[in-house]
Structures are given as C-alpha cells and as structure tokens.
Image (cartoon, rainbow, N blue to C red; front, top):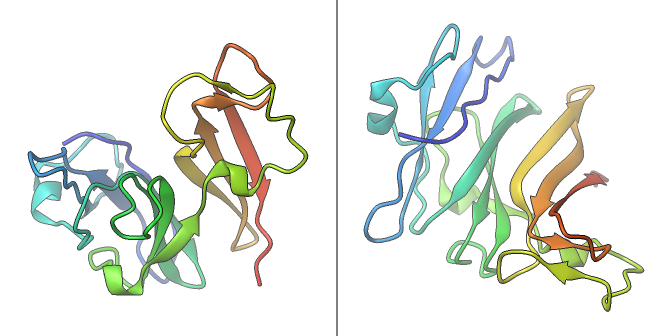
Length: 173
C-alpha cells in the first residue's frame, strides 16, 4: 500500500478517516481504500480489503474533504476513462467513507489551461508530462465550504526551469 493518508474531522461522519491508495495492478487499475483510525500515523494492512471506489481504470492522487456533511474524494483520472478527458479530475461524493460510486461521480477539475487566462503561451515551458494538467490536487475548506483548489503542474507558465504550483479560488454555484 502506498499513497498519502488524510485525516478528516466531522462530528457527524467520523472522528478521523484514513484514505489510502492501492498499488497499480497489471491492468492499470488502482482503487482507493479506507480505514478508521485514531492517530492515522501509518498504513493499516486492512485498507486493501476495504476498497471504497468502483473505478474501472487508474485513478491517483486522492485527497479527501468534508462538504455538506458528505465525504468528498478528489482524484486524477489519468486516462480519461471515467470523465472522457485524460488528466481531468474526478470528484466522488458519498455519505459514507467506504462507498464511492462512479455513477455518482462528476468532473472535479479540467486541464490547467481551462483556468489560465491571459497567458503568453510562447513563454510556457513543459518540464514533464504530456498534458498541462494538475498533479496532486488538494482542496482548502473554509467555513465548511471548498474555498480553494491547489495543484502542481509539470508546466511552468512563466518559462522557468522548475515546476509550479497553482492556487485557484472556487466559485460555488
């Protein structure tokens, strides 16, 4: 088991939830799993038995947050199998940490180019990756609502030699 573990607090859901990511298999699928924990200090061997997403192809970079008393899981859809857009984000929403259904998921974010306005594309430098997509997405929640999205990219909009991270304000509708 590898990946990053996130602790989520919500008195209506659970004291803490540990989200884990299973290794990619030979058929390029990976799933997210969950486990209840008190300290969330290290992976639990039982996480692999508690897969909570029913994705059909590789997803990665899961981050969890609570919104409207629902648990949200934001992942990368690397091959576009779920969203139809390779590299887009997939937003899973569930009332339970152990049951995220693909049928209830929606596009969570698009390519970074969808949000980059007034960019001098002659300066943009590709450092890694084939698409100008977000990596390791995260959500900053303020006052119980998603307020900011952040993610890194293998492209530097300013033409620099290092990858950049981007922070975007979320405008809820």
